[in-house]
Structures are given as structure tokens and as C-alpha cells.
Image (cartoon, rainbow, N blue to C red; front, side, top):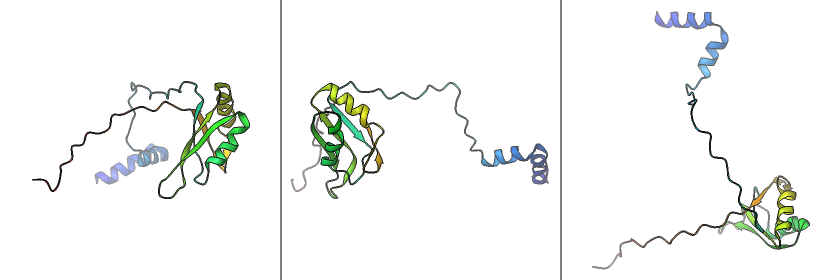
Length: 141
């Protein structure tokens, strides 16, 4: 009985309310939640981080593409140790800051090997202390 009354009330409310309720997740985001932290851009440097690379992209191809915008000192695609294919990102080092700015501006959002790549200034590597060796020594009494 209660089910038929609920169905009749949903039909009387109109078709959109019933569908909206059917597909609703019930999640309502809080109104006073802080916005997500915006990504802080790294300081300009001669080293660029390039993401979105094709798995078949090589360091030579990366060097050739970025050398159109200035003197490239080094271009390296980070590869998987087992397969040897690209992990999808790499680094390009220019000789001057001006060349790096031109390379970032010229290649950001462009196609390379059929994929859209993104270039930004590389962040400096953070040094973490090596983990302490807390393993037990097996075979010792």
C-alpha cells in the first residue's frame, strides 16, 4: 500500500522529479568547503619537464622537437627498465633561460608523435634521507 502511494506521489510530482531522484547520488557538496589548492608554477629554469609523451617517443625525437626553439643541452625521456618504452614524461635542458622560455611557450600543448604534450619548468628534486635498515638478519643467532 505504501509503495503504491509513493509511486502515485512521484507520478503526480512530474516526470523530472522522479528521474532526478532515480539518478541522484544523494551527495551534496558542502557550501563552505575551501577551494582546492591551485598548482603553484615552478620558478623559471633552464630545465623543462615534458609530460604527455607517447610511449614510442625517444630522447632523440624529444631533442629534435625542442631544438627548434633554442640550443638544447640535453633531452632525456624517462623509460621503463623492463620494456624500454617511455613512461610518458621527460626532461629538456636548454643552455639559457630565454631559450627555455621559448621552448616552453612553443611546445606546450603541441603534438609530438601524435600525442599532445605539456611543457613546464621543472621543479627541483627534493632530497629524502635513505631509509634506515630495520630489517632483521636471518641466519644469525
